[in-house]
Image (cartoon, rainbow, N blue to C red; front, side, top):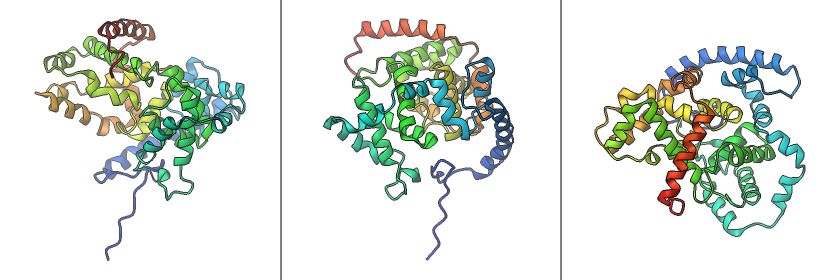
Length: 339
């Protein structure tokens, strides 16, 4: 019988797709490795065996250039406030796991277990250890910690990534809390008001910064939610390459949710001419899928430089002002009741 081709798996346990372009990836990665090595040396000097860092312009600059994987979990924990919360609440996570459980919540989470990263060998039932149990624990604990959110699809992917990086159940729980409780305003509550608001905010930012694309969307009556809801809900998981997602998250934990707008705007601006070739709705949707693939997004180091230059200035004040007006508009339309 013919030998089975060996399974090509990336460093995080994800299987490479059938049509994976090994040649151009190797070419990129050999260049990226040089950068990673240089950054790792700088980070070791910055940390000097001491696990505490203060927020500063230097640290912000270092984070934008990528956190080496060996320090990633620790830096995410510190800059997001998750570390402080964990230290102030010893034993809290285990208490949640030992406490009373809502059957409905448990059922909803169980249903999604096998649907979470079927392409990742560490989440397979056959894996040892299988990360499904860890993922289940983190989600169940979080659902009881934040009852207004409970559990919502999308959270499984985010918690899964946190587990792959931290390799620690309790840390993943506190990072999930930092994201859902503080960094992403109201994305996962039942009415998803924050999510709907931010999709509209992106629409307004595109109108300002890439008006031709906004005009195309208007002309074809395309709602932004159709195109970008997964970008927001999954924080680019399964949309952009793993390494790129992690680099985005480095900044997300430090600088907050405006990073999501920077990424979205950079993608749209970079591919403006390509998007504008679309002549109907399916075409537009297809173009938006295609712009999340290829060398522009794979070359994560240059991509991250681009997200800070391409969209131009974007202050948190601008984002917050737009959030207020978009939210008010949505409330007026009474969209809080129906998703």
